[in-house]
Length: 377
Image (cartoon, rainbow, N blue to C red; front, side, top):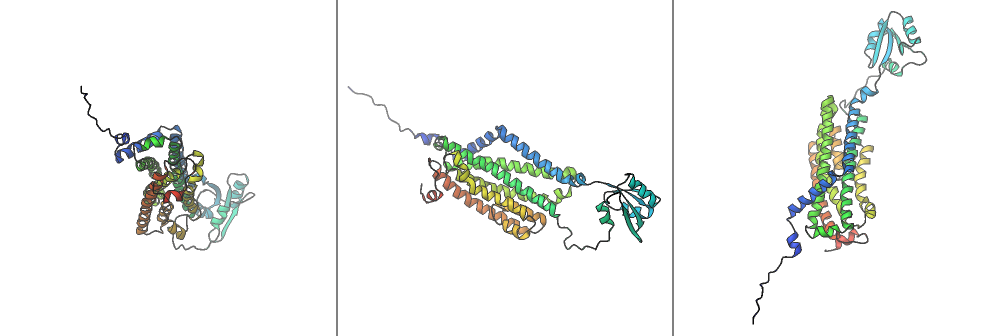
């Protein structure tokens, strides 16, 4: 009596069957990261508030002169009226005599009065006090010669530097922290073990970085459109001519710099297994993001400091646009800064991928960075 044996077939390993191509895995993870953020009400609301704040600040900046300027009513005799009428923000009422000027000032019809002539000199008349602006405008002042008459206003330079620094700081911190929290949550809940059974660790890292980077780029592009669009709507030459090229360079440098920052955030987050430990793990990266923000506030008009900052990867996205705006950067320096930043980004991604791959499955106490770099697995 014989028995029939069924032919045996070797079944492929579950992991081999489940794995997908690297590019497909990156696309899936990136799409998931984007959809999770877009479905979050907190993310959408915070983004709208951020963009609304940018729009409000740009509008206020363009209208600052008209909002804070006021017209001073002045009564003047015929000899003085022509001179007073040339002063800015002054409304002149011409009268026949100095007595009429004093009467209008006394009864509060005008804020001040001016009598006299350019040859004999002027007298400013006030009730209890006289407007300082009128006094200074009619005083004899020395001639002023400016060696750089086209230099931007220092106050405007300060606010533009503050704007670049704040947008870079807020975007990098927001999306970098989002990536870091996503990594730790997947590691703490052990979901990452399931994910790694289907896709490589580097594909998971690339997907997270690309997905969140695309959201950050979209936000920065909207900020740039708001700035340029407001300038076009209001006809503000500072926004259209002075800030156009710096904003474009900011977008380009931020695009490269954020990829570097995002990869480092993901790598440092993979060293810990609890959300509670995330702050201490990512604090070095946070400090590297904060330093350019404070430096550009204090040294926004210092060519030497900005020149040094333009070749430091973490501060280049802020320093290079500022140097272009104040006119202290040659065309090749911006390209060199971009090349340095690209090189730093490539090196950061390689190191981040190594750390991420070697520490992602290590749970328990915080993994030491030195142990990860020395480890071969």
